[in-house]
Amino acid sequence: MVTMTTAVLFMGLLKTVTMKFRKLAPFCLALAIAGCDESAETIDPGKSQLLTFKVDTSYETSKTDDWLVLFNTDGSVLEWTPFETSQTYQIETTKALTGGTIGVAVLRYLGEGADKYYNNVIYLNIAPGKVFTLYP
Picture 1 (tube, rainbow, N blue to C red):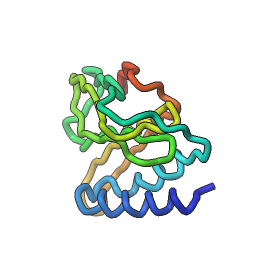
Picture 2: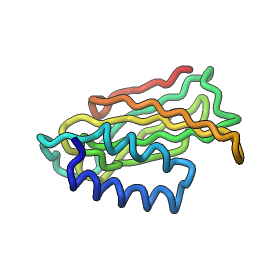
Picture 3: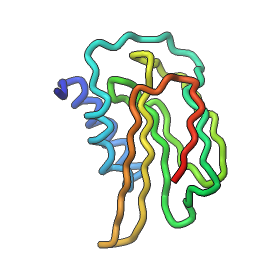
Picture 4: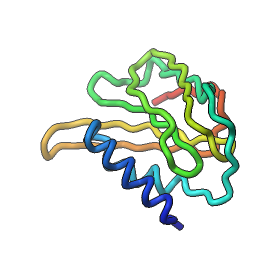
């Protein structure tokens, strides 16, 4: 069930994302719905390691726009970054982590005009600090 707080967060996120990254807007709804949790505990903010994200050499990114989005159990976005093949990213945040786990969304965009393709994969209940390797 989507609460009023989640809906407000979603609208703010949608405005930010569509202004800066119009290609990601179709995925915002999935992030807001996937992260709803009323019983979340809050972990003190400070710079914390969210994830070590590795992209395998076999994961092709040369013809797509690829993004990694990390979010709280309440659906609020913690960090996002574009990514490329054969790279390793240390994702950190200063935002408060709620619930003790994070969600990870891998977003892909390909195409122009009428030939637009989107792919969205969401992983939930990921422990902060985990090493996460992306394969095709």
